[in-house]
Every structure is written in structure tokens, then in C-alpha cells.
Length: 101
Image (tube, rainbow, N blue to C red):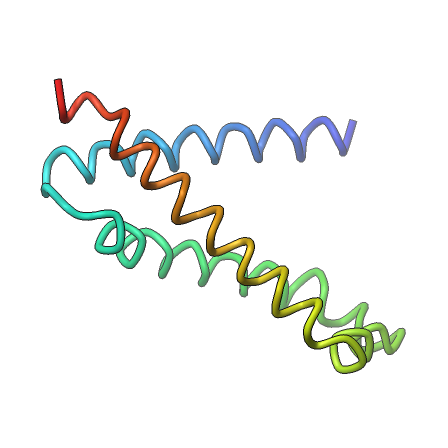
């Protein structure tokens, strides 16, 4: 039931994110990069807060953070792919938005 709640919360927050981003594109006539800059700052702050509360204490206690130090290129590649996915998602939202109808 905890997994179901997490999936439900993730789906709900993604839907909210997409709707709010679409509204942002339509009302402010922003480019993809401008929209990315406006949306990602609060999103990043919430992710960092959640990581500090739930992940950092466990990683520090178990020493798992050393995996990042041992394999920095893999983590850098994962970060770049994540940014590419966000950029493409916003571009797709901008292109398919009702803004162009």
C-alpha cells in the first residue's frame, strides 16, 4: 500500500506539473528554456529537501555515497540524460499545447 501511495502521489504531481507548465506557456508566451528556468527552481528545491530528509542520513550511515565518488561519469551521464528528458518534455508540451490552436 505504501508503493501504491507513492505511485499515486507521483502521478498526481506529474499531472499538476504538466497542467501548470501548460498554463505558464500560454499566459506568458515563454520559450522552452524560459519555462524550464521558472519551473525547475522550485522543483529542485523540493527534491533537495526530500533527499536531505530521506536519503542523506541513510547514505552517510551506510557509506553508500562513495559510489558517487567512485563512478562520477555514470552519475554525470544520468544527470545530463535527466536534463535532456526535462527539456524534451517541455518542448513537446509547448509544441502540442493549445497555445498554437
